[in-house]
Length: 346
Image 1 (cartoon, rainbow, N blue to C red):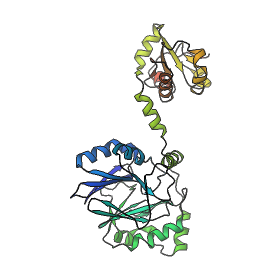
Image 2 (cartoon, helix red, strand yellow):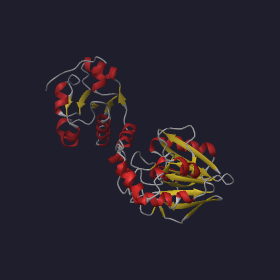
Image 3 (cartoon, rainbow, N blue to C red):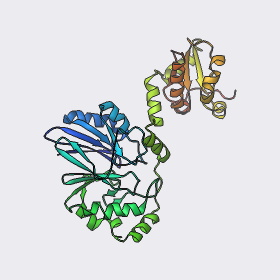
Image 4 (cartoon, one colour):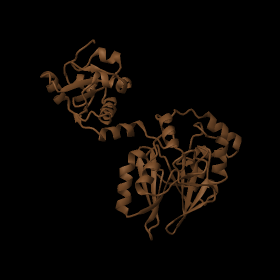
């Protein structure tokens, strides 16, 4: 069996494949590692049959929906997942045929209600149910410490002690993010409380910080919608950019063919903007477009605080017929830091 681990900070995803047939599946792919995952698939010569998440992630963005579309294979998840983009829903006791491999689905809820582990030969991919020296937290949406107790003591810890454990996270970023059932049974401090009441009390007493992107991660992973980063990246592919030096030169010579549009809110605009820039807040752009910019052939340079909102604004202008719209490469913070001139007030 071929098993490749893809690390992104504390997050781990996997390419698992049958060596004889080179047929495989991708487990817990992360959006930021999409191109790296595709490169690994190509370099190993694996023909991916399934792409799947072990659970609904709350701390990073899943690439299951996008990767499944890119590879034209089914997106797989547990039957209790609310994600509408899943093509194949599996449950406890199901087996996926991956070449000569038999991948057994174990429903291991607790971290989330849709959590599952994948048992294949002498290995188990545990998602966030069982970690190295820890367990998944149970204080996020659909978490249940009593269910996690049953998943651990009633399911995973009944596997053979030699079974190798591959979790979905390793926050200590060990050189080898793998353990065994036996090692965790003996050394994992979260597993010292065998009795359910004590285990539940232990989990409820944990005081853990909320994931940084909790709301956005749950929104996108549950719906298959886009992240803000994806939205901005897509917009950036639709437009060219103007350098600060180029904009500064054009402003200095009062280029009659250029209109600078500051899309920030009023207070930010009044505090300091590119000399001569018009103020059209991003939220009013479509509504004020025809009165403020009646000529769609003009070259429009959009400016914001750090360069993200202006990218979206320029892409919108292009969609609305302003074929020469660009965004400043950077934002007013970089403009001011570079010593370019500012104009204040209305």
